Image 1 (tube, each protein chain N blue to C red):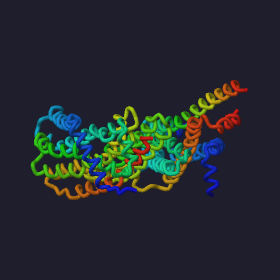
Image 2: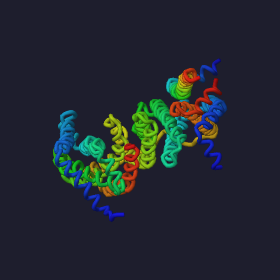
Image 3: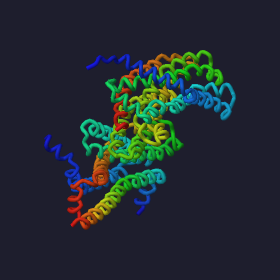
Image 4: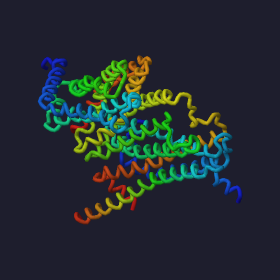
Length: 246
Length: 227
Length: 58
């Protein structure tokens, strides 16, 4: 087990392994996306209250889940890189940030597109949308810190600390925003949660959620490969990797 | 190994920082003036009507306090980093968390405490009911140390970068939100004659939490920035 | 045919539903293409450099 972990975390091995895994992951992502979208957009019936507009849920909710999940992965990888000085963990953390920010952005934008027909405005200071917006700011901070330093490893380590501080803060921020929201909006029922989710809607939703996980894995490995190549461009394994590539 | 006293080291760093702040008075006064000027902008920009100002007052004062803290944050480590004394401090036998705590306390004494002293005046400017002024002072007393502590992490992370200023606000402001929400709300609630103990407890909790964790994070960040 | 038109109509919410999915496609697509381009560019550049180095030291 330790041997395997050690071998896996060596950049050269990872680079080759990821290169082989990416097509498979991409294929699974594609299939799951097709199944989830077909189930969500075609098979699932229209909602009796919201009509067809609720179909945004199949992209909105998985994105919101991913936004938090990726932040946790990023912070964990950053922490591992910080403690054990594992280069690969730093690369994983650095590559996760833009993907997480993208999902957060999608969750916000689709939430807004859903809010327009439901609430009549593009933006409501709903607790979840607000928390998501702040999460986007946290991602921006990590990305900005990552690209600020001249030395990539120092920048990685600094942004890992920021991500860990963010992890401690996310529950506090979430709680504060929830509290603030109940105070100011009184009994507004959040229309984001479908009152009783039917199986025909739940199944595509879960398929989409899994599809997003696989998508993340695909995109993450692609980014990590590019990042590794960039950071390690002077080491000898790169030469072998490039030779094999030709 | 020589005998080494933590409290002596703490006091030495604290008094050194306070002395330095006393020598560079403009750096201390400018954020305070900024605080006052920002607050006076609002009646001019929105309306001088007492009713309007009264509802906005807690938010305005707190946002202005946040921004003026941000202005003074860089001072915490920047000049020591540039002249190399920060590196010396970290190489000394004194644990880095103690260095951070002493510097944070010094920062709060020269930037947070003056805000506290001048805030009642601003409350009067913005037609805040007299009953809410003690709450405003309580929230500032509990909240501004949190701003200094959390800000220390941000400064420690950006001190090695050439253009750290704008980045610092991007890193730190989202982390300030819980303080802003609870503090501004407590002031508003007490202006309406409601109980505010819950909010104050929460702010106290934030203070304890940041007191115990922020120095660790800031010390780790400083070590990374200095390398 | 009617079915297909109905599908694209989305019960009157076509604008919102399709722009949500379109936007997601653009963002997610970019996250696949950007690393691909970056990797290609890096591979080309590094291969060139290695070839040059090998030429200089026979």
